[in-house]
Image (cartoon, rainbow, N blue to C red; front, side):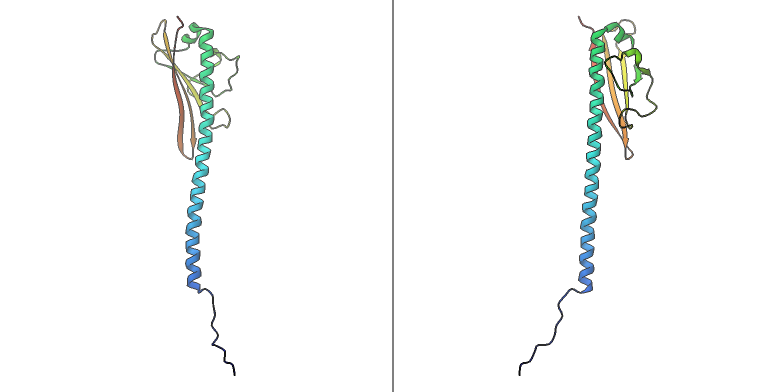
Length: 158
């Protein structure tokens, strides 16, 4: 007669299952945290790229204003520095007279998180030979303030 070996059960104990679920949850939590951090970094970099565009836009516009009329250009600067809010969209027809004096009090541009300001200062209170322009775009994201800024020196054409 043939005898069968005793029956044994194969499988995982409840302890093994709990340990596996614990390890899996730690790995998934770390992966989720990394993914969220990467998404935030991508979003900040996207906003930084757009802010750089807004800074360059004003710089190119200022080059045209300086070339069009130096006396008009330097008359909008002061020795202490005049601040202009530039939260509007620039057009080729805009002039320095269209600018709003004073720091920006609200966000503008697109998306409406940016504040773009221009500071014009000159080297002499009467007839300036050099005007310094600082273009600054700021925005706040997740409680952190970011700044893109460029400072350019302009001088009268000889």
